[in-house]
Length: 330
Image (cartoon, rainbow, N blue to C red; front, side, top):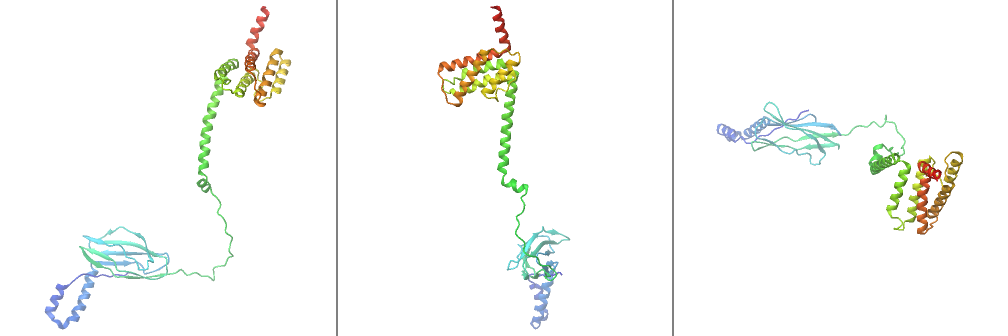
């Protein structure tokens, strides 16, 4: 259905001509004719259209204001019903068609009832024009409760967690894991490079180098005796493991001495008995310092340091051959 309405301004000039021609006897006729003419002239300038005045809740209707002019036309803000039940879904841009301007609106309502869309104001060359008000009926949606089956009330169920829910709640844990992974990557990479660099150096040369580095750390002067013995025994154990292919770093003192004794008796290692006794004494007294909080004297510490170097020299094949040749020459 379409509603069309209009109003225009004064027609005093035309009314004066009629009055002079026919006099005041026809005043009522003049006034009636004037209003008819006023409506006709207004219709030619401003009009409104609406595609329907009856909708159901939530449905939309198209409302538009049409002006038969294109110059100096100004549309005012759309005035809705006084109860604020009619809402604007979308306000479209002004269209220009055949020397006309059309302002379109998409309207809707979510409350049933009858509402009045009031007159709208349009200015043409600074003259005010009003549209006619429109009555809009909004009906509810009929529900057939007879055909609709009845169901029992169900329990409230929690929605299952999705990966997005977990990520939004524990994103900080993911960031922490990434940071830890990056740190481990660089630490392990440096550690692998360190071991690769160590493996390229012969065990005997590496042990000698580490003994010199231990002396330069001055741990005894700082009273770090336990740390000193930890590094000293690690140097000896690492040398034995690399030189003799014995798991010295993972073995206890008794297991290591037993393994070396077995290897020495079942093969041609020819490790002097005195060297094995020095190794036993060094490791056992180092265990007392590391685990029993024993504090040896400075002379004892120097003896243990010298014993470690002697053990490394005696277990090195070239050093043993040199010592054997010197004994044969004597």
